Length: 207
Image (cartoon, rainbow, N blue to C red):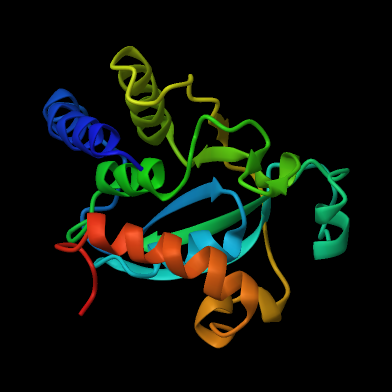
């Protein structure tokens, strides 16, 4: 993640908040709201978003496909159409959807098609599953602005699709990094990425 990308995303966040200031967002003024993101392996996605202030729960699971109640093995085959994703419940009084989108674009490389690093397949695609028109509008806005600013070397390929059904993954996938931090994938893949993420969002990380 280069300084240029981080700087561009931060500037766009400010302009985006101003651009949407007069739009009636169908979020509840009190209570919690939901965002659903796919940024590759859900173990890594979960570990990062759980760090942010205002995020209450992060559930790993599958969405965006055709198979009903798929298993991890089925999704891993790439034949179900599902993406590994995280269902994020957050307090909009503490962290906004715009800020979650900022984290989304920092958390992974949205220019990689159907993969993240060595994790390859449609189940590892970059995707934003919007829950309402406002979320869709904001996702498309930031993608367009980031592409125009050429924040990344390549064009963003993030899928923006309506949220439908979310299937919670098997229990052993939940809170995976926290429970399996000494495993090689956690130690050598997730941990370095998580440290970079925490450094970027140091002012928004839970104590």
